[in-house]
Length: 246
Image (cartoon, rainbow, N blue to C red):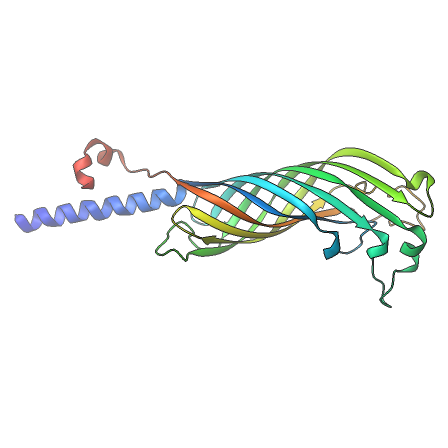
């Protein structure tokens, strides 16, 4: 009888650990912020150019709905900049089109987004302090952009400014690293497909001087720090008899 009693107690304790571990994997959340850079790809910057990176910050909330799947809501704000003079041609110099047009764009952008992250490892099952996981993400975002474009050589309608609201699809890759039981360090590289060609106000200009068939992109890359909140959910029988958990 003593052996059976001990076996029952051990089984109950093992069961409670299993249920709590399974529940905790789906009842964790994170609140954090990030610092990084925004960038722009469009008429004035036909390729991603590192020198166009400008300061940006983000705040976000993550909710784990299963071991691999995390839902994320985020707000991001950053500056935008591009210059024809930074474009490099095949000969190493500024291409003829950009050298003739001499346009530059600058401004700022605000973004509100929701995304799904796919984690390749069980990030919150932390057997040690060096736990990590890479992840992929994709989502939907709404953005507000306020930009000014000027052309030193052409002037006229090439000098424009204004603001706009738009829709974008954020996507990218990231890496999470557990600094402790609650603190996490993150690295993320992400692109945003914007369903507009008006971030630089040039899409309706002379078709010989602009590309009217290529929509704009913008990017956010940065580091983040977040805090994990744990909510352990156990079956009702354990709540009603707390001795089972001892």
